[in-house]
Length: 145
Ligand SMILES: Nc1ncnc2c1ncn2[C@@H]1O[C@H](COP(=O)(O)OP(=O)(O)O)[C@@H](O)[C@H]1O
Ligand SMILES: [Mg+2]
Image 1 (cartoon, rainbow, N blue to C red):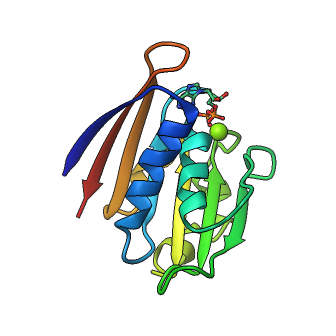
Image 2: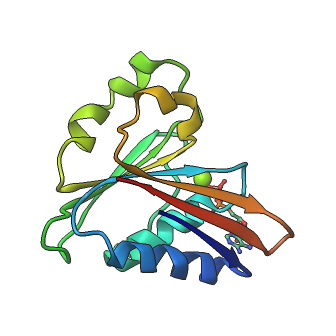
C-alpha cells in the first residue's frame, strides 16, 4: 500500500506520524529516508507522541535510543536508530538489530536506512520525506506486507 501526504508544518508532519501509529497492531520496522532536515526525527517524534513518550531527541551521536512504552497492548519499546555515522553491516549488527526487529514488542524506527537496505526485514514500512519548500514536506508511506 502506498500513500502520499503533503505537510505544511512540523506539527502536521507529527500528526501524520501519529495517525500512522494508531494503525500499528504490533511492533514493526519503520524506515525513514530523506536528506538532512527532511523531517525524519520530527516524524519519529510524532510516532513517539502517540505512545506518550514526551521528549524524543535525535540519537545521531549515540546511534540508538530506546524508550519504554506503557500505553500499548503489544508494543513495549520504541527503538530509535540513526545509521548516519555507521559504515559497515558489522557495526549495525552490534546493536542487536536482528533481535530487535524480530520481536513484535519492539517498534524500530531507522533513520538513514538506505545504507543497509539489503539486510533490513522485508516486512517494514518505508517512508520517504522530501523538502519542497522551507516548511513543506512530501511524505510517501509504503507499507510492505
Ligand atoms: N513540514 C515540516 N515537517 C517537518 N519538519 C519541518 C517542516 N517544516 C519545517 N521543518 C523543520 O525542518 C527540520 C527537520 O529536522 P529533523 O526532523 O531533525 O530532520 P532529519 O531528522 O531528517 O535530519 C526541523 O527544524 C523542522 O522544524
Ligand atoms: Mg534526524
